[in-house]
Image 1 (cartoon, rainbow, N blue to C red):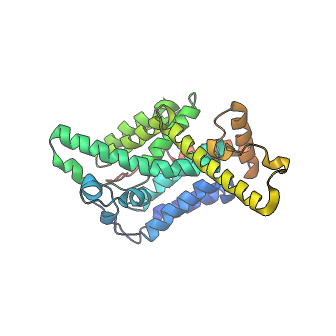
Image 2: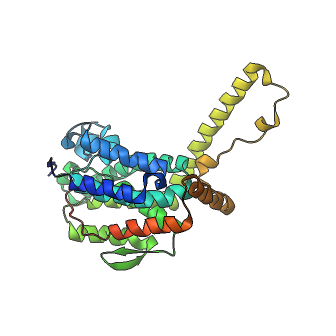
Image 3: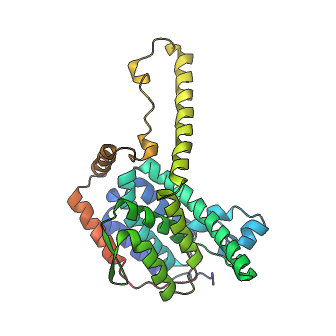
Length: 304
């Protein structure tokens, strides 16, 4: 089920066409880097898919924890990659401009690992409840679990918006659940547990402790960096009467993503738009274009 057909790279060509259509200058940097990483690992995988997919048997029983980092960034075939990356493009433009590139990169890193951990926990629970050890053998790859987590976060920030699932308009905050069911009905071989893991991680971020833990870790890192900067300044003879620019508290907006104050959030959005040479009208056109492209029928496989 993890065989990859070479020479049929229509999905890659369509993805490249989509990127040119949007314009590389209009894609936020972290979103673009994440997409390039996924494409690069599709063309030059670290290991064969059976050696990077994540399962309870491989990760827990055999202690191969590297799969937590490998599995999200590998894909079964070019169509699997195409639909995941187009979805990433759409969500990245929305969320990275809203939260800021630093926080968005931090979020992607945490979500990539957390979705794998939740996936392992769910598979172990199912194996015990169903008395079926086959759940521990189910192996999954792909970025979809991270995308489901991002969809939950996007629905939280856009609660009044609509999206379309199989041509049916759905409130944005409920779209993840509608897509979870729809994908399972269309492609029963896709990883239902993997997609559910992404939703759980998204809920842990917007309603649970995950965001607070991430902010606490960011505060520790920023405080450590600030202390090192002060030590450097003192060693160079700036102790005692320092310049007023060193008396100001360390700027944490890069880590908080502008989420502490509504005014900071609005300013971050406008700054991101200006930095990428975009305006509201053009960004709306880009997102409508991407949204319409996601309405295509999806040929699913056993994948995340």
